[in-house]
Length: 207
Image (cartoon, rainbow, N blue to C red; front, top):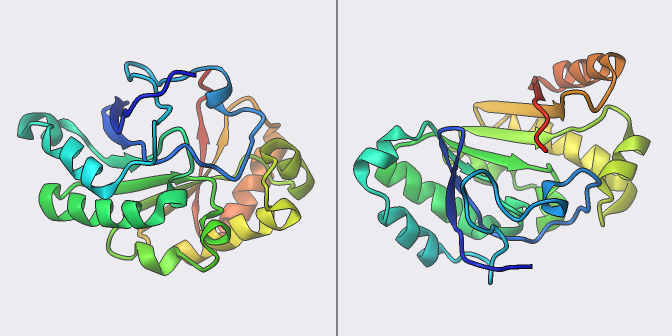
């Protein structure tokens, strides 16, 4: 496993932030099992968790024209970004102040379990979009797919996190991956999202 310090990388016209490789899940479909990078990035396996100072330094190395090109700054790397919540929040504040870019978090939705408290209020004013991996409408199947260290409480905690985020974050999205579940399950996911008051998105499969 080659390790580096790839803190920032580009995907689909957005700037992605790789804060940590820690994650409470061992998802059966995780891209980390089959690759060490994304598109044109170097290895996303980190030598150590990204510090706030390292993040700021990396951001400052991007010229203004390039930064202007990015539509969003997305906290998403080879780990769960809420595992590094303090750096995430401070980094989002820095990005808002200096670059005025929309900020998104791609998350498994277990940040409140990870941090031992409801973290949704902390996102207010710092995060524009939270994208949560729903994966499946069925709790039992979710546990088989995600294999969270938090066990059976994970599915309900993920749904509760999504609901809480609607109070503090303008855009809350829950996602599944195209072709991985049936159309019936997709309809069930839509119903869950409607009940929570969040948007449902079916993401394209990436191999």
